[in-house]
Length: 379
Image (cartoon, rainbow, N blue to C red; front, top):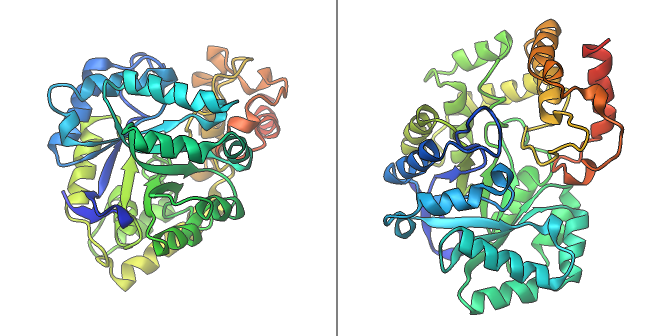
């Protein structure tokens, strides 16, 4: 494993972080974690050199933090830096912050959290926590030893990122950034701005929820195949991130031992400035080709779920995007009917109540897009 400087903290953290949003599941249900497999996976990651484990209040329907607490028993807690997040979207008053942190310490079976983030900040959630004394909360949590470092994860437009970044003496931040999303949300501009202030940057969605490594169109695969070192899409996309000195940790939500081992190997040979000019040019071409194909900027994070009407929102979007990306809308339609509509989770059940809108980190007009799914897949 390679280790990288983590901003002004002075720490050296593993290039690859273990994200616990996509742990092994039973029966495909997000809240039903396969406990034995998940514990083994997290411990395998730590044994492989990963020293940063990330979870959150809402992961796996609220079951993620307790599972991570179990995985870090038997001495594993002492081998890793633990990160979790204040659910800013659930905060109504100052007391809520203390209550969430107290419960998280219990769920994670620890006396402190190394890296504590304000989760998925947007213009509205930032306004709410700011008005309810979030800075006093963070300072108090530091003084009492409940957290060591304070940061935030971000999902909104760049001007909001700029405002948040300059409002407090943050230790780190977490942004969506990958070979496709260079100008999206905080983007490259935000990455450089944070790094210039000594604020360490964690990258989330490095493979865009797996979209960069699966169902690759032939013309894009041909560009990957033309790379001098014949890198796989996962290798190329991750190496592109680690090539940049401003990147602190690349956080990957790995679900299987095979995914973990592949990413450990890539991380082990990663380094700043390792890509050739030719490789960078080919990856820029890949970015251009993908941007021509993607219809919906959904990463499948599932924050919009559950839908009160039972709609599988991420699944509906996944197959609309899939049909476009592989240039086979009939295959997207077939899979949509098989895995969404026939299970009683169709887009046509949407009544445009709007409950999903504030939950979406990508700020998508979800009801409108669901109508597009209905028109293309159900009529």
